[in-house]
Amino acid sequence: MAEVATLEPPMTDPTQRRFRGSAKIGEYEVMREKLGEGTFGVVSKARSKRSGNLVALKKILMHNEKDGFPITALREVKLLKMLSHPNILRLEEMAVERAPVDDKGKTGKKRATLYMVTPYMDHDLSGMLTNPEIRFSEAQIKCYMQQLLEGLRYLHDSRILHRDMKAANILISNKGILQIADFGLARHYEGQTPQPGRGSGEAVRDYTSLVVTRWYRPPELLLTLKRYTPAIDMWGVGCVFGEMFERKPILEGKTDVDQCVRIFRLVGSPTEQSMPGYSDLPGCEGNRIWEAQKGDIDKRFGPKISSPEGLDLLKQLLRLDWSKRINAIDALQHDYFKTPPLPARPEDLPRYDDSHELDSRRRGHEKQRALSPAPAGGTVGMGPDEWNGNGAPGAYRNGHDYDDRAPRGYGRDRGPPGPHPPRGYDDRRGRPPPVDAGGGRVPAWKQDRDARAPPPPTNGHTLPPRPNDLPPRPDYPPSRGPPPPLARRGGGPDVDTYIPTYSSGDPGPRAYNPRRGSREGPYRDPDAPPMSRERDRPPHRDADVSYRGRGYPQERGGYGEPPRRTRSRSPERGQRESEARRERLQNREREMYRR
Ligand SMILES: Nc1ncnc2c1ncn2[C@@H]1O[C@H](COP(=O)(O)OP(=O)(O)OP(=O)(O)O)[C@@H](O)[C@H]1O
Image 1 (cartoon, protein in one colour):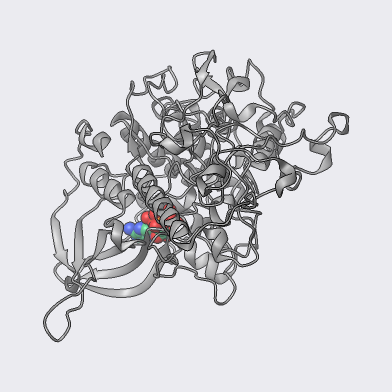
Image 2 (cartoon, rainbow, N blue to C red):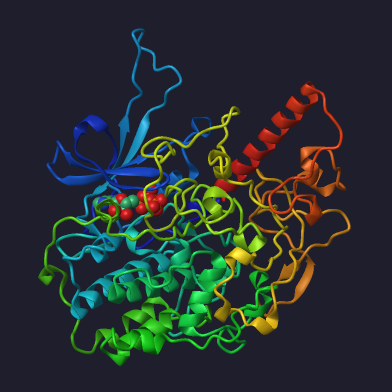
């Protein structure tokens, strides 16, 4: 929360009404139950009885009542309250629905439900692009791009990283106004604001790299750069720009490895010239499968983007070198916006029937395709990390192999809409995910009976892709042979695998220095909570904590199986241990939410 408190007051737009305060939910009449849903909110369409205006009510889901108000929602509310710009969704007020009272006038343990009230926007970009009745003209694309860049310029100038730039988070009204929404992953950043002609500048501290929906995630985050800059949002803008021409996400990676392969296939494989410092990034070790990619961006987008200026802007947004990737200030000055057809005026744009991402999912326009989960908003910095060997496709969601039956959303999977889950699967439609006996969230892999436990974490080391993650053979030169054997390290199934842990005597990977990568000392994830004492102690086979955060030989069970216990424990001791473990996990989770 500290980072929010230190926010400098952003520039304000006097034409925007400011945050009002709180209202009662009874002041709104719900018109449509569900416009959209995410992990922390179900969004409904409503009308204000006071003003008659249409609004969107985002219900803040409390997955774990014990933990109180979700930190992501708190962040979102705090940031939105401070922001004021025509291209940023405005938070009008919070609406409260009091917990139902019983005969004695008591609410019991139930808490009030909170809603974020924002102006109703007729469409989101993802919904529009999957609506076959909507076709964008080039002037219209330019108009939307200009507004998107204006919004981002304002955000970055206010030292805010959005960290979840994607088409579903870009809202558009029938007046042609575009607004950036969903600040659940946004945060304040330290460092210089972007300056004209100077990219996004240098970052001054580390943040978690587990942000941004995979299909929109920039290569530096896929390779786990932590000292990142607003350039991560600019990559997302590039993806959205391309999407407006192809009418579907341009890089639909099924795993993080596959995502990289697709990126490099589009823009060329990284070299020290095109992406200085890439080979020092933690995610690069052992993953050299992309060396021969050339890049087919001209061939792919040349015919679709009619002007060379448009193609150039796309290339500058999708630049591998994050320090040189174009910033919003410069992008707005790009010749693309100065050459005919000139950007349309918002008020001249056509009006359409409402289009939301959820509608397109319902209409079945989305093909059955890979979900591309980004980290849970609430689990930023948590959860299995593919590069760390847990990276089964979909690992954020179900902790093991990619499974396109799984529902969207659990653990705030920030992927594009997916197919509906099978009956009986908790699809979180307004319901919280299952909780375990201790009130904690049940790891997704535990919810799915067929799922194996996730593979062990690897202390922040990069592991080569598992065979299932590998792209088809042509991308993997046979001369290289199969990927090297997996280094075994790390912990059990319910561990926050994002936290690097080392057994004694194992220095672990060394720290990455983003200023040309000197590697010094044991690597420690800056976003991780302090190491627990257990993890600093030498391995102890029997206790659960002993295999958590430590390697165990492959022959002991392969992926995901913890080592077998060799000594029996008394039930009391077992219970004590599991309570202690639960408490540790909850503390860790709380710590993670705080980041
Ligand atoms: N003000 C609004 N007007 C109209 N629709 C909206 C509005 N706000 C959100 N939506 C719809 O709800 C969807 C989800 O909203 P939002 O991204 O804020 O929720 P979320 O819980 O953070 O979702 P996710 O976890 O997928 O990011 C949007 O894609 C959009 O379709």
